Each structure stands twice: as C-alpha cells, then as structure tokens.
Image (cartoon, rainbow, N blue to C red; front, side, top):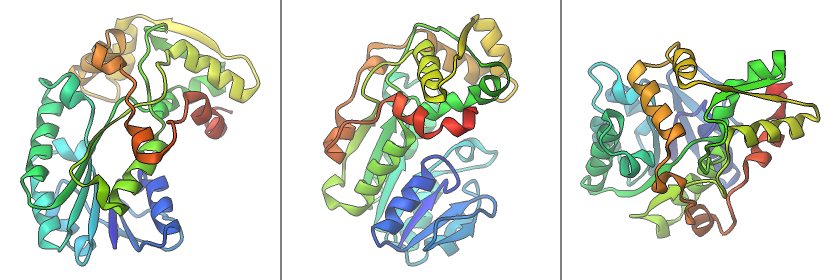
Length: 279
C-alpha cells in the first residue's frame, strides 16, 4: 500500500490516479474529507500533527510526502512525519522538496525543507527527493481575470523560468515510488523551456481560441496583490525569483526525461488541458 499526502492537489490527484491504474493499493491523505479516484481510500489527517497520520501509515510500504503550509504551522515538526512513517513500517519515502534549496538556500522556507531532506537521508529508509521549480498551475492565479476581463496581469512580463506541469511531477513521483532504481535519487524537475508571463498569456489565448491581453504590473502592484494571500516576506522572495532568476533557476533540467523516457510537457499543453478554468 502506498500513502499519498496532498491528495486533493494538482500533484496528488494525478499521482493517485497513476498508482491505482498501476494496480497499487493507495491511501490518500488530506486535512478535509475529499473525493478520490476509484480504488483508493481516503483518510483525514493533519500533517502538522504527525501522530494523526498513524492510521494511514499502518501497513504502508511507501509514502509520497508533500508539505505546504504544514511545514510552517505553529508547533509543527515535519521530521516527526519521517519517524511516524518508519514506525508504521514504511520502507520508502518520496519527498517533494523545492529547487530553491539549492538556488536560494538562505530563505527560511528552504532552510526548513533542506533540514527535512537531511532527516530523510539519515532515517535509514529508502528515499528519493524531488526538487521542482515553478509550477505551470500557478497560472490559475489569472483564471478569474481571464474569465471576466480577458486579461493576464503579472509583473516582469518578459522574464521567464522553465515552469513544470504538475502532471509531470506526479508521473516522476509514481516512477520513484514504484521502481527501486530511483532510490537515493535527487531530481531537479523543470519544464522543457523558459516561458515568460507574456508567452503564457499567449498560450492561454490559443487554448481559448480568443484574445487575452497581457497587462504588466509593477513590482509594488504585484506585491500588494500577493500579500492578500501570503506573508510579505514570502511575496518579496517570490518576486525576487520572478524578476531576477539566477542561472540555476533558468537551467532546463534533463531529469524528467531521465526518469520518464520522454521530454516534459510544454506550458501550452498544460493550458490546453486546463482551458476550462479560464472560460
């Protein structure tokens, strides 16, 4: 049995689907009750309280560990999740980390994630670490403005990074959960090319078959919008990456193709599959 955390998200859902289609027994975990693919069972648990995972982990052979806000919840100790996994008999953990642990290692989020990586390496369990860059699905931030105004508003219109389709992250995670060859692997996951916000708007327009205007925000305007849903420090951190990506953040990694035997999907493919969100 394989346990998938973050089961309701844009990685957990396709990962669960891939594993069930491969004939695996899957237990999905999320903080709230959720619908899951046929063949999977669902357990409600809070990753900020690792002991709550015990019912899901009992008897599991592998764990896909995705932490979002749980990593930083008050009193949270994500390292305890590794201990709970080992106590439940889990033998393999695939951890979703972030490319930022190597490209911008001094930020508080990346320091905490790197510490979790180190805990996993030292746990005695089989492990694989996935380090994706920016997600194609972040374009869903623009869905409402595209639906209502036919506009994409973003800063740094002509500065891009090689964003990755979350479905490709899920496919890599499935391969790592199912194949011993990936034990001890650390994979940097990117899309096939650098894509700017302006080009993303063009791809969304092509998928819709109707015009979408690009409006470039100033950094201050973008920060004001972002801080409605995240701390100011994190907004500044994100804007630093978007506005001045480092050479490492611009690099197109071969790791998706190395694992899957095919190139990662371009942003236009993601836009075409998710066009309903923008209608």
